[in-house]
Amino acid sequence: MGAVGTVSALLVGGDAAAAGRRAPKGALRGMWLATVANRDWPSAPGLTAAKQKAELLAHLDTAVRRRLNAVVLQVRPTADALWPSPYEPWSACLTGVQGKDPGWDPLGTAVREAHRRGLELHAWFNPYRVANHTDPSRLVASHPARVHPDWVLPYGGKLYYNPGLPEVRRFVQDAMLDAVRRYDIDAVHWDDYFYPYPVAGQTFADDDAYARHGGAFPDRAAWRRDNTDRLVSETAARIKAVKRSVRFGISPFGVWRNATTDPLGSATRAGVQTYDDLHADTRKWVKEGWIDYIAPQLYWNIGFAAADYAKLLPWWADVVRGTGVELYAGEALYKAGDPAQAAPWQDPAELSRHLTLAKDFAEVRGHIFFSAKEVAEDRIGAMAKVVADHYPTRVRPRG
Image 1 (cartoon, rainbow, N blue to C red):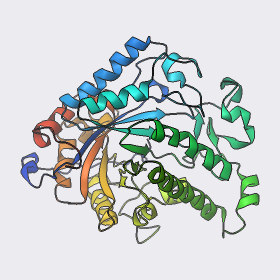
Image 2: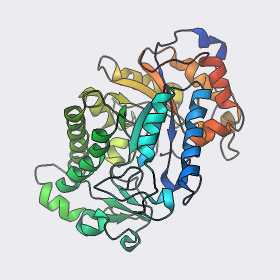
Image 3: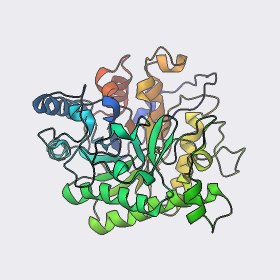
């Protein structure tokens, strides 16, 4: 989940008492539950199956206690699986050993237990990240990235599948759709990682793929964007073909393009623009109706000079208006009370102000909080204030 460069911030006040204004019926109240590097769950690799399950259920119970109604569970963090997949190995975040059966089915259990608690379960997949290192020999021998080494590129200290290869796009879709077929998940969810975030001085070495497949495009950037468009549009169509009730949502970095780059862009000065740097035309996906919801990571405070929450939220509301695509705001709960963050994030009321502001925009159909660890710990009471100001009772998502 990305972040913009450091710029001095200015706190803009908000009135939590205004929370009584328009309260959207059935608004989504979600939290991300990250498994990559054991960020939220399991608390460590190698726990017993019973301990893993107990921790998972505790997170679901926390969601209920905070009057949330959706959990976005990361089930494919690094081209692996938190279910018995015929395509990819068991995730090392479970046992500490990639490919080792943990002795239970985390995704199946999560779906069943979430639904039992009145929670939606959105299965969160990362399409292209293979490993948080660059040594293929550390992957289990049967890993598709070792079976097909020509699919993989090192970049920025990590391994990635090459999005420019049609066979890669097909494979990652097959791997994700296996979970759609097997389980009663409510949505397929992607985060912000498409082409990797730029790393200074490094090149994503997709020359061969570009030479083979990029001839119809004016430049490499246009070809890369088309590759990402194809992944999104093809996945959307295949999800609906398998199970029409399953929704498809994406949570991109919060800035599509700055207005100084493109007049259609937002009034921001972000150091990353998804269109240009991640080759992800997030605005187009909404306008084309390929996705059911978009949850941009609006991980900045109100008044932040480079990327002001109070400017980005209206921009995204305008993008989704009239499209039928629902807008959920991604909220940086992890910043609340972090001493490394600017002054606004030391105020327990900052996030509540975000939700107050959102009530002015009918297009905003909910919020998702990053992430589960902070929903439980709530360092300075920011989550508790959101609940007190905006979530007086539990509601089911989307009415």
